Image (cartoon, rainbow, N blue to C red; front, side):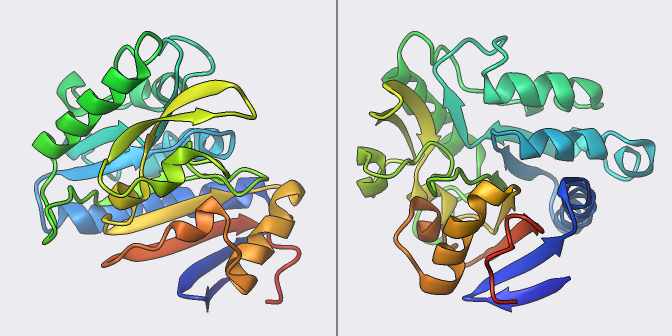
Length: 249
């Protein structure tokens, strides 16, 4: 079921498996459309548990053969300050579960680098890479074709957590953001970069997300996710039944 609410496309799914199926089919459809009009699709993946189910669905035979994966450039919207081989690494999980199984050249794969050693330098170099590789919008901001995001129970997205300095950043595109409640640094896209995208897709599942989903979508509450509003693009939320259970739809 699809509906429009507060300027967002809402795709309601029965459960996590249905969410993964619908999101994967939408992924294929959207990327096909992008590649019909340009040579390369620039795409950013997210961390969290829900994307893992998306990855598993995308590599199934009915979907994997529909795309020319060699024409997709993959990035990551945020990263923990760990080595890429770590099971905590967002890129590491994406690589193990999806990217390593695709016919895509290494020069289309763009992880962060040495974030476990120097998060500031990692963020700065990732921003420079994005500026070099992506086309710019009319404000001079690199424009992703497609960005995937998740949402935490506290309303954070990427690594833009409540009450962190990263929420205030207006100029930088990729930053080191210190998350005090976890006492960790993260490398993260900023809202400036996210909101320049042509399309942003949230994947949200679980009952623990329901109260915040309702506050963001129906009451415009000031959670980090509420700041995701592409200026000249589309915004979609894929919600399983539990995550959408408090919505008046």
